Structure formats: structure tokens, C-alpha cells
Image (tube, rainbow, N blue to C red; front, side, top):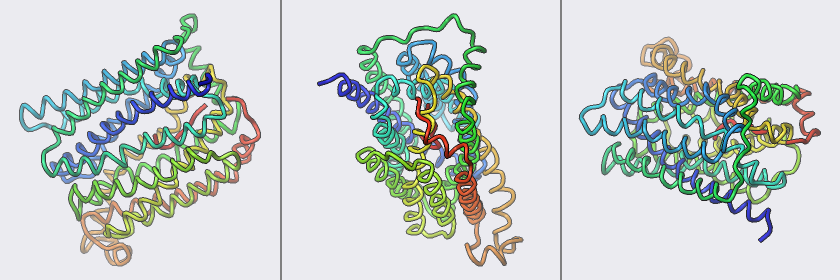
Length: 435
């Protein structure tokens, strides 16, 4: 076995641990979403949990990126995985002691998210450490398979387990998965030389280096900013799909729908992993985003499980093409030694769209659009005749609007010259809208 094959084998071991971790995290995310909605009946409460789970990692990702370039990346992954289990354990203990208050769930989710922020830049940079440039797109497909596990595998398992038990079982399983991830990461770490420390550089200097890597090429910076707009629209379907479906169905149906929908990501991720794409990345990015917008609008159109499953499947099927394009266009245009810092800053900028969406969507659904589409509401006689009326139709209408705007954004992105030039420039970074 040559060095390249051995390194790819180590990547597969590391990837396997992240796959298990993603499944465990998906169980908790699904269970908490259902639990909070059943306790409150509010989309805003579900959205707030998602916001707290996401915002710490965004705010701290730049610092985590600097740490990934200054210290042992594999050790940071171990610390991030193991310490993030503390937040889940806190929620579990509160539930075992009696009825859990919302603030306790909020606190536990925040604790877990804070420590998880150490993981992402270190993981992304480790992938670059292990692989050759020719293996990037193949690895990207596999990474997306692991990421999709929280949508593909976790919901159906969680829906089944919630039918025979309760959310506490899901939390226990999630905590146990952390051990698998830590063991696989330590096994990979044994075969790699530790990252040389850059203690001589201050954090501020390191941030400046990362910003320089991102802003050096105008196309990369524009792509990162545009991705923030894209993630804002994608945040609508991520946040509102649970309350929209639970408004007319149950958790078991929700788990089945999410699994069927997410299988679209699995199918195209496997295709990309086995048949790497070698050109036309900008065109593939814009076409896949335009189609994703159409299918997103279809997802919110009616309270019909079959339509939701089909449109959800097609929506998720488009995302790996967009992610692979974003990954390649940035990874090949940023120096390897700066990727930890660059990824941290890219994460802050590009993922701010999710933070904004999580903060706004629940409030808009509960206090504006849902009342508009109840019987006798302002839009009941117009929009309601097309998409229906009821407690979940406002969330569906918001998803439709976001889908249409995503289509518009993809058209604008295609006509940005600096982004199109990135395909002609190849050096070494990473960007992803859903991971």
C-alpha cells in the first residue's frame, strides 16, 4: 500500500467516527425539535433551539480556526467531541430529575455547541493534511454522506424510538457515540506528526493571515458572502420543516419524511464520490442552487406527505453538487497552511445566514404568516386558495418565498465574473453550505 492509499485509509477511519457522531447528533436534534414543539406548539421555540445550537459555533469558529493552525488538530477534535457531550448530559440529567424547563434545554444545547466549535475547522484542515488534491472531490462526497446521516439515518431511527420510548433514550445514544468518535480520532492521530505550534504569532496576526487568505482573491470573498445569502434561505426549510409537518402529522411521519428526503443527498453524494467532477464547477453550483430553490418551493406548497417527500428528496439531491462546487472553488484557491484560519473566518461569514434565518423564521411564522393563513386571515382568500389554510400554512408559505429567492440568488451568482474566474485559478480552502 503506497503512502497516498494509506492516508486515504486514515481519512476513512476518521470519517467513520464522524459518521457515527453525526447520527448521534441527529438523534438529539430531531428529538429536541419534536419535544420542544410538543411542549410549546411554537415554531419560534424550535427555531430558538436551533439558533442556540448553531450560533456559538459560528461566533467561535474563527478562534477555533486559529487553534487548528497553532495546535494539534486531532487533539482539538478529541476535546471538541468529548466536551460537547457535557451539554447533552446536562439535559439528560434535568429530564431524569423531572419535567425539563425550556431554559435548561437552551443551556445544554449552548454548552454542547460551544465545545463543538473546536471540531469543525480542525476536521476540515485534517482532511487536507491526509489527502492529495486529486482526492479532494472524492473525499468531499464522502464527507457529505456523513453530514447527511443526521438527516438520512437519524430521523427514521428517532421516530421509531420515540414511538416506543422517549427523548431520554435518544440522548443516551448520542452520548455513547462520542466515545466512538474519540477513539477513531486518536487512532488517526497516532500515525500523524503533530502540527507545529505557531505560538510566536498572536491571535490577531493569525486572524489577519486568515482574512488575507480569504480576501486575496476577490472571487473567493464574493463567493463566501453570497453563500451567506444562500444559507439564509436554506435556514428557512431547516427550521420550519418540523413545525410545518407536525402541524398536520406526527413525529413518526416526520422521521419518515426527513429520511426519504435526505436520501436524495445520499444518492448524489455517492455519485460524486465515485465519479468525481472535474470541470464546470461554477455552472454546476448555480444550476444546482436554482433547482434546489424550485424544489424548496414545492416542499411548502401543500400539506401532502407524498409531495413533501418527493420535493424534499429532490431538494437534498441538489445540495451535494452545490457543496462540492463550493468546496473545490475555495480549497484550490487558498494556501494549505492557512486553511484552518481561513476556514474559521469563512465559517463566520458564510454561515451567518443560518443565524439570521434561525432568529427570524420562527417569529415570522408564529406571529405574522401563520395568523395570515388561518381561516379568516388576511391571505386566506388569496394565497390560502392555492396552498391551503391552517396552523401550518404560514410556515409553508415562508418556505415557498425562500425557495423563489434562492432561485433569484443563483442567477445573480452565475453572472459574477470574479467567481467564474476561480475555476481558472488553482492553488489550495473550503466552503460548504450544509455539513
